[in-house]
Length: 113
Image (cartoon, rainbow, N blue to C red; front, side):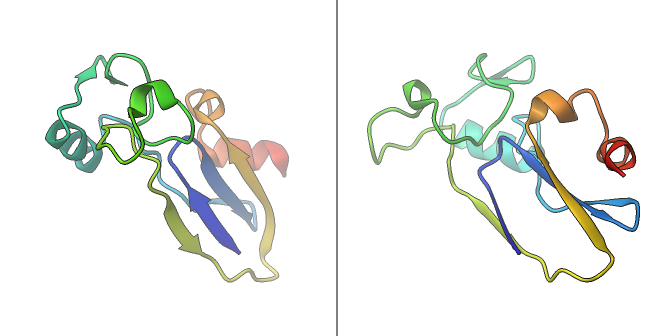
């Protein structure tokens, strides 16, 4: 299975009742994202990219990306993760920050199981 993440969701694999996170949360406060954002003259206000978005990478939101080919602090550069599934893998949960801001990955896996 290949997971492609542009930052505005999290993929969690349920494996024998345990949560295995298959993607990163690209929040503006993450150290590597903060550095990238600041290099591109973006700012982080109260955890929000340019005071507007709670994620640092996303598809869409063209009003923040500028013209095609311009360097924007909001990136749509995807993260790729390849996972070889086994018989222990039960299900996959894909959710946006609306879920993960109120629930841990393990809690979600426990509820689904």
